Length: 261
Image (tube, rainbow, N blue to C red; front, side):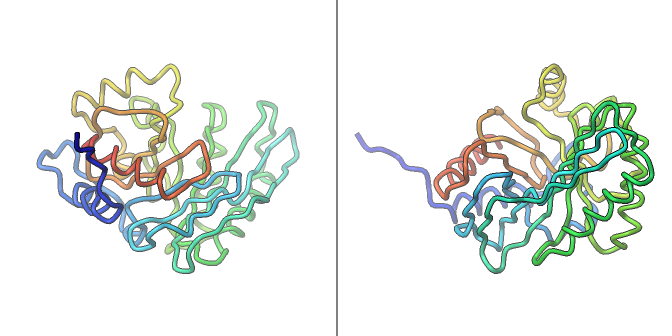
């Protein structure tokens, strides 16, 4: 019996990028990504807090979003923890510096915490080969005013040219839209580890409906260990892998994504 093997990475990526580049025939899946993100590749691998060797990526079609630091807000204090784990990437790699924000329920969320948070994010934005920054903050309803004001201050600090991305809870991209109008370039719907809201998101995607905010319509955040039968095309894809990345893991996931479309 002949065993069919998945094609090589170049063929898989070409097929996937063709699907991403195709303007979907239905207006329901039209991407409205802002111009500042245009130079960011359409495939992005998340590199979280662990040793990662990503020297195998093709820098022409793949970027790396790496956890650069973690900000913890407690009462009236703030602690900034930089990345300690090594990250190896090709010399020509395009990097997105990710800042994770974690806030205690008793965090003051005052002006000092905001100013120091903005300064920390601006610092990682100046690292070599960083072409965009991403903020990862699962802000509760009571923390949204602080988050809004932080992003406004961050845009002012970074200037008009640096792309600003945020991760978005799936609910923010459905009926709980509070992000429209934020001074950012994209909000990445996190379609994994969604918990109670999974059914609503699956139903919406299966019915062919788009996310409500335009900011959520240009990208998707996916995980290698959670499967989808179909996904909208025309999006920048951010990929999370629970284990260290390898060339084989990337190829397997890209091949599966091709099947999703």
